[in-house]
Length: 379
Ligand code: ATP
Ligand code: MG
Image (cartoon, rainbow, N blue to C red; front, side, top):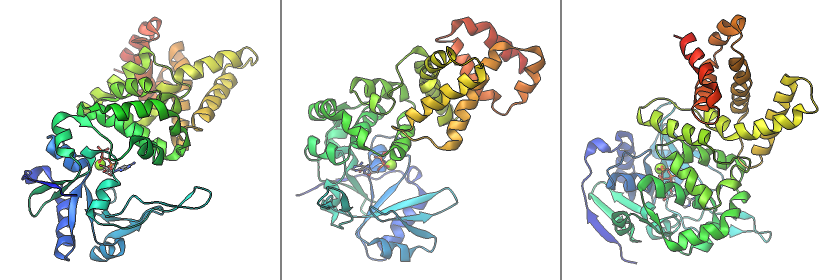
């Protein structure tokens, strides 16, 4: 394979200083080293990269030795995290080949086979994600036509879609996300294959899908991603109890606006919205047999969450907050004069109020006056 090499000099101010330090140190030690993946893609499109990934021919132990504040992580494949603060690290991956060794049972026993740059290219998911940037030569290295795809805003998978999606079904939701993020078209092969194989997503561990779901919806185009996931039959393998309504739409658009304004967002809110309708339906069923409102509420919440975490796991702290938001809805709706102050003091008030407000603007217009009451009360 002969790569295309395109000279391009990115403005230093768009490059992460710490990532540059890491690249320089590895380079000085005599290894081959590049910026790779999403950061190169985003820089070429004039977008601000979320993170900077580095690929090198140095082995993880060799990289680890170069940085005092670094650690080796990962069991399935080893990576090095170079730490810059409690929250910030730069990830360095050694070139590896996509070859996996499986046991007779089909279980992956090893996919830590190191390789060279060309091997590393073909184990990546899409052409647009397989661009390498040499910061010393100011050169993008493109083995698979990623530059051309970026130009045309097209998403092609590396290798055969059927094989690559079954190797790792998470690639299907990544394709959909990148499509919306970049305003790019999925290739016909990718589209058809997702439509065919969407159900493979149910083989992915719920813990991994939690991380992926946050990436799907905590951005400026979460609603569009939602609609595409539905269209491709992927959504039901993440949220089988969730069906589109105006509340979900409003919440996703609201999240997008908050992100544009640099306001904080929390997955608590999103999951509480996604599961609200199912919780309500469960509540109505249980309430027929259960006289206590409170017990019926808690049981309904519990059941809906148990069903959810079979697909996408949610940490305990998060489900506790979801339940708080839900239980506070009826308290807010009652507007009991003696409880107003207590509710305003409740640390969860803000989120429960936002939730109520969005309901009143979508599926529960009858709550407009209640929402007004709480808007005033907190002023
Ligand atoms: P973003 O950071 O905007 O979500 P990204 O492309 O950087 O997008 P990461 O998850 O940070 O996504 O992954 C970095 C790179 O690693 C990708 O660009 C791709 O080359 C490779 N990669 C990530 N996940 C997979 C996967 N499931 N299969 C193959 N390659 C992958
Ligand atoms: Mg990235």
